[in-house]
Amino acid sequence: ELAGAASSERLLANLVRATAELADCALGQLYLLDHTNTRLTLSAEWLDGLLQPRESASLPSDYDGEQLLQYCLCQNQVLCIDELDSALHGIACLPEAGRAWRSLLCLPLHDGVGHTRGLLLVASHERCSLQGFAASFAQLGSFALAQLQLLQRLRAPETPEPASPAPGTPCASGSTLETVPTSVTIPVNISPAFRSPADGLPHAYGSAPAGSPPGRCRP
Image (cartoon, rainbow, N blue to C red):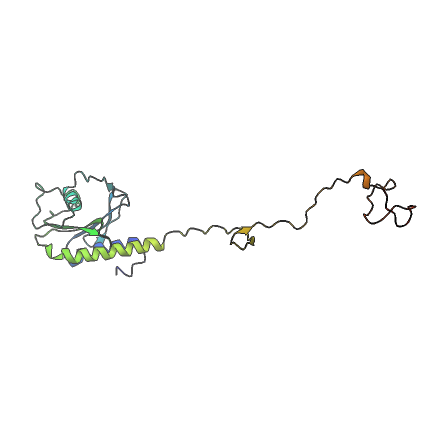
């Protein structure tokens, strides 16, 4: 079900549901760090057979008041407690329920290069040992993170390619010259010596004015 999830939300929901059901626990939670590693957000929660709606709430980077999460994330260690005691353990991260929480397993999740990207947590109202699920849940969580990154890349908006410049005339060296207009008008100043008194137009260099002796050029 993780590999076939068509959206990030469905993927995360399937992960917390699968881990809770496999461990026979009432609660499954997934916490993810943002890209700056300064905010830890509860991204998905499965409680008593139902996916819980999520609020846009996150914990600061020091995770003050969340001792269990702080230890697991900062120490990069799996935390398994077979007998929870609210007087000894800070369990504010666990939702309120009609029955007390008795057992808990919390483990860090790593991406493909070994960086910690979040926490996976399951908890039960019964006293039980959840340590045996740590290794398989770590692999399941790492697979879900890889799928999440893939889905995010597929849904990222495409960046439009820049417009190509107008083609010019290639040079032998490989550079390009800009195209120059083929029709160019250049002003010419004509000396008065070459203007005709009659029409003000210059004579051709090989012709003589009317009335001049043949074969002689005008001085």
